[in-house]
Image (cartoon, rainbow, N blue to C red; front, side):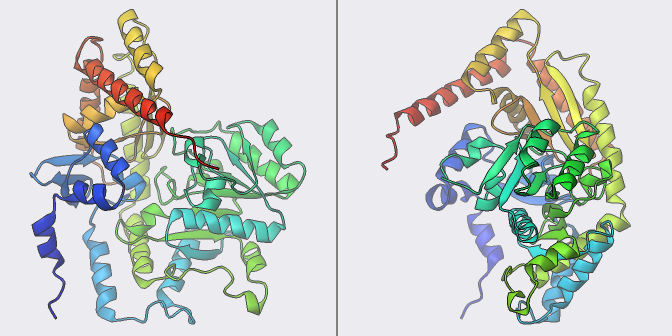
Length: 471
């Protein structure tokens, strides 16, 4: 029997990406990518760069939503995968205690404060969030959940129940009982928890949607309110973990002591999906409190050797190359350089964030012509202006970024930690040029905006014309 030849398949068929997805996967997503000019065919990646089929290089300022913190296709991680395959280790026996998962759990606990000393491995961030919710309910005997508006925690049903972005909850019916707390509102949080029936309060220390950074006193005070009412305090570190904010975990910026954390993304090294819930041993044992419950929460693939091995390799790279510290220093350079443009561009409000988790926000300009153009775009859709910035960054300057949610004038920047000073200078120069192009309300940038408005209105008209669901 002939061996499957992946290299030949790639050589023969790379370029069919979008037609294959249009036919077999998600044609709506394909339509969006084609509309905004993001239908590139990437053929190669290394570090902070991508190359398309024609050999053009792109600066990746998104890093797979933070997955590629140590850079793409790190040879050390690739070699670790080869080593695992060469060892022919027993894998996923299930009725055993796998060696590599024990090593990775040990390594993770060493990077945590002493009270976080028990690990459950998952395949993704949303699964780690699900584990946190289940363990919190088991530990407290309570069923309700509390979460912040605009929070993002994943798209499986439990995670969706604490999702603070309504557009992702729409259409999926009744979810778990939860209480949404306005961001930064301690009085509302106290009111939500005071009945002592809420198992867990979930937060992102820095919210991914919009890169919202809380006031210095909010998270410590929120943790204190949780302690007051016996609600567990849960920090979702899926995006902020492993150095993204310039600390190993985001909660370290505020000296917090969360009861549970969820992690994933960067732990993968960019190769193999892996996630982890890390919690207090006392909480952990509330789930596995009898011998007949030793397997009551489990995952077939959660402790697989490849996932564990890439996690170990990634932690070593982060430590050896001091990439967490590099995230802090390079992030400050990026923030300072973008904020220096505010004096030149009236539409630029601010760059904010910590480490290499940066949100760049725009606001309504004061000059009459630009204000009218701004209002025209926003009348159709309040997220189109950010798209007007993201598109030319890719098309003209070959820089990959992302709008930060469906609403608001924010782009999100999550570059790999290996980004250089030259990369930062290139990005800032490109952003400067794109914003220069925005200064002419009759220029090509606002024509692009008009085309986006037409597409948005056409999509809205199609949605309005759809028949109501049959009950």
